[in-house]
Length: 633
Image 1 (tube, helix red, strand yellow):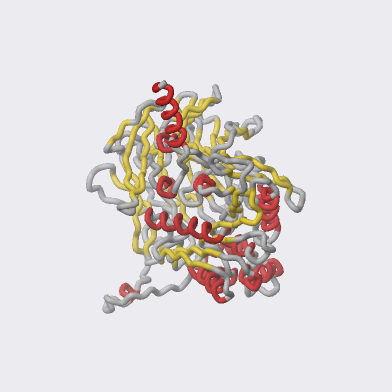
Image 2 (cartoon, rainbow, N blue to C red):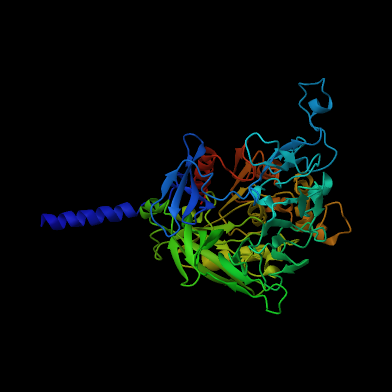
């Protein structure tokens, strides 16, 4: 009898333990896995795990190796000699690096040396600030040096006021060695000032070490040329967008073969994310969004033969494949996520079509949690299209109960809404606080064809708003949704969506949260930094009175024009160093809400940009986010 009681107690204890749900504090204890590559001997995967420390307000990293076949991870102190260094030339003689170089005098104390205490900047064109930093006259340049200690470094872009790596996010993927080690291929947008702010025309340049001369390899293409790599057989390959000024254009794989540029994905209706050549040089594997997930595809490379170029989807399922790390026999090594799980390293067997999870950094944490369930739902839009809507249900979901629901508005505006895992806009965390999350793949989402993706441009307040409302109205019909407790939340374009919905929702929603959202299209045009973006998306400048498309944007699709209809509580969040959607957007929205007597709150992060990156700030964000929902929903 005692034994039965003991067993029952253990079962009850275990069930109780499993009923924990994800909290902001747990989210910020999860390890963040970053692959560094496959070891030189091909036996191990080398990776980094960053773990945020709330107490120290930073992340601390550890480095590990783990067999490519799975097994136990081993911590290592040094990774330098474990993975092949792409910055070392093929013959081992030289090494590449990058650093900032002062190319122009912008600071007042540089222009007037006698005024050393001056705190002033003088600009003669745009690009005076970018993302979260002001231009101080310095630019990223690529250098090479002999591969030995204290060797003299040589700037391959001397005196040029251009960047490589590209700002703000470029890294050493922006420069590579040629297979013979005699030249360096690098990415740069060689435009300056206002011209730089108006264009997306990056090119691939080749610097010859012997002659010290530079050649533009992609001058004929006017859009992005990025991510150069060489195939195993020596063919230069890169990702390309055709149209200047359109940052969300179709991204294609280009191979330069015997003087010809071959577009491997020209006839495929999708956009490439990243790519990896097969070891034999006969195929390119790449990732791309497709129907609400991100998967591996392959495309054959026929050269100049008459063999047809064919794109084939390799993986499928409700998860995302992110990094393509490399190959081990028949296996491709990748990172994988889903809405309930942060990235881990996996191996996929291309012949057997089987998966193996290799790293298990957060498995012990997830084992203690009752996780949400996510479902696919297809909703008919107002123009008769089929739209995927992700519905995320709270842990221990009971269809006989009623739950409040959140309409999630994705940013971008052109960006995929897939099985990704965010450490801020985390669907698993939202659902774990007791909310049904409704996440529509509205217009502007990759993975549903280029036409669907492009339909949002110049139509920010049009069909996409109907898509949002179609999604929430459809899910709200379910008996488990409390129709009197609906909220809408989002960031960036998603924040714009919240501001716009606040003026047209006809009392559907009980509360709103907008993070770094666009509120006033005119002041946004006058203060944002990448002008190509607003020119393309808005259709032009607000002063172009004869431009019907632009005038529609500023008159009809401008949230500030609808403030007279605001009557619903709204939380406004903004970063002080957000130069993409500058702080004034949030200030204008909050001030309008306050002066109209609408319950509102302003959450301000002076040192954060378009994102919230510091652990303690991130926890404040999460706590204020859910406190607001508790108060108003």
